[in-house]
Length: 299
Length: 149
Image (cartoon, rainbow over all chains, first blue to last red; front, top):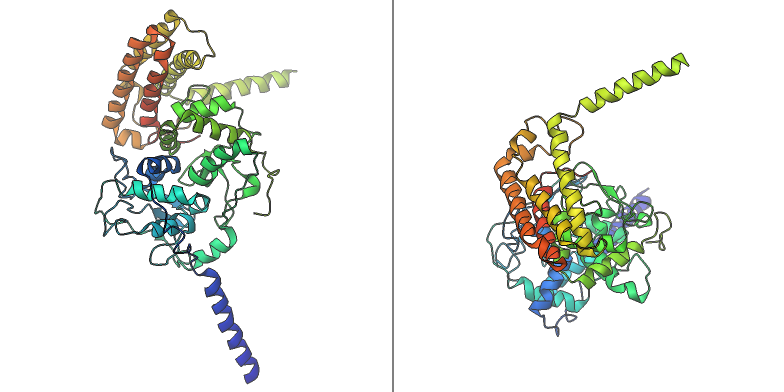
């Protein structure tokens, strides 16, 4: 009996140890970003394409470049609040190094080694090029500092245990692209999948909050309330590539209804990009497969 | 035969009742947005090259946008015509809580429409930038006060 007990205790200890090892925050190699120098102008493009301000600006603020956070993101797991990412050294990210931003954006890990909640779309940003991260870091430092403290997330047990996010990452963290595309669609894929993180709203999620990649961009319930986020897949979307590009530029649908909700902020971003970039995203959207026929179901 | 006629009559009555449930003010405001969309479509089609540009048609469409912008709005937005109170609208309750902001943004649409009115007859190239400004004025309200479909 004692022997069985001993074995059980040993198994439990081993189980916890394996669990801790598996759920430990995984960071980038410290020297990977050491020799990169960021370009502010390029960084502004990365910032706009990635939609940073759309979530981190102060709600209802006129100046969307004061990234003091506070916007609420209700979900099935609780309400998340976008944190302060202005260059304030105390309340923002003013004392971060480039490698800290790289760990945050591409690994979802804070400088203190905590997992971030995936309301922060690091599962898209993890496909970003190292140089883009360096450029983004340079640009973020030029923005105004704001000393408003970040609002704590309102998340109940068990989701308030940050370590459990290590398990979420084991299941869903993936820095491979979802779509296999020919070379001429790679730019659009980079913008849509890595930077603009379209799928975070346009793809339905499973019960654990992971994206259902077999229904990639097939539309989903609105995460922040009533209604649905429309499908971009060819079974539903009847717009031409030109219509998509014009919508991203002007906010007008082919019927000259106007963009609304959080997508209005996304259109603000795309309007500031080049026509080439908007056309690239439109071409990617038109290449999406109908749901259930996605090229990669083993994601 | 009689029976199917009776059914049709009942269905027609029900349909009329359902339509009558959307207040006239809601239909009127949706009508003004449809007028906007129709005229924006003429201008947008010219900007994109899908419709042949003529100065007269562009000017007429822009004039119509200004005309819509001059409709006095309060009669179209009575209390109790939000998404929580009735079906058939996407106007969220927060619109009435921020009515000054909403009306300021309606005014911004008017300004954008006037800029289009001044430019539309000057050439096809003048339309595009003004479409952008008009689109921005639409977004100004629709990002906050309109519910998704």
